[in-house]
Image (cartoon, rainbow, N blue to C red; front, side, top):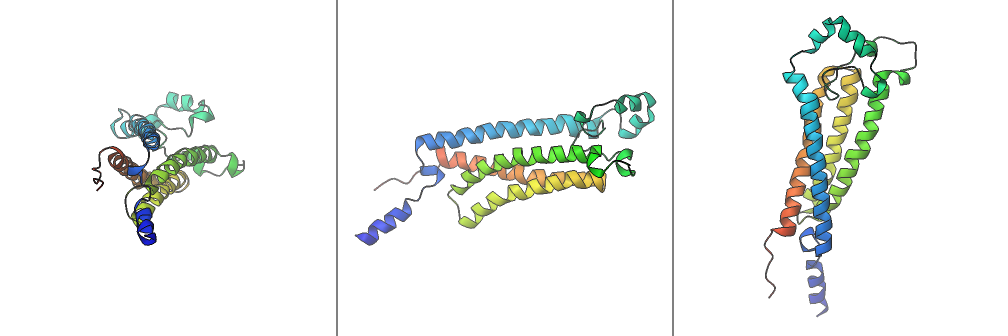
Length: 209
């Protein structure tokens, strides 16, 4: 009898599919809210970065030829980030950033902007995957697989942050690292969201004998 109760207790370990209704509603709400946030971020990248970069009427070389445009850019405030018409994601290192300056490096515009964007990115994206990690922890899957679902988004986030600094201080070509970095946490987010919703609301339940 004692052995039977232990086996039954182990088989009733909580997963996201057999949680109580309020817990399912909370997890589903987190998934939906985070999904809308991710869609908004994706829309911003497409409209603000990808379209101007690859489909803009003017390329960066043509813009540099315009003297008036250069003068207008010189008056832009620091809050707008590094001077570029190509968007934050694909912004190139300006001539000012690669030439030696009298001011300390931490007063450099590129450094200040990168540092600001880094901490915003780490806190914002990090909090998303702290919540999603909790949901991944409760999926009905193997421990090793769930561990990978938890850690991979954080790896992707670090790659994305590394791309930000490398493209600013080494070479603009490093902006391509945003693709594997962002793609990694984007794919895991989509998989965990869809699987969690399926396990909570659509997965067939075994009939109790």
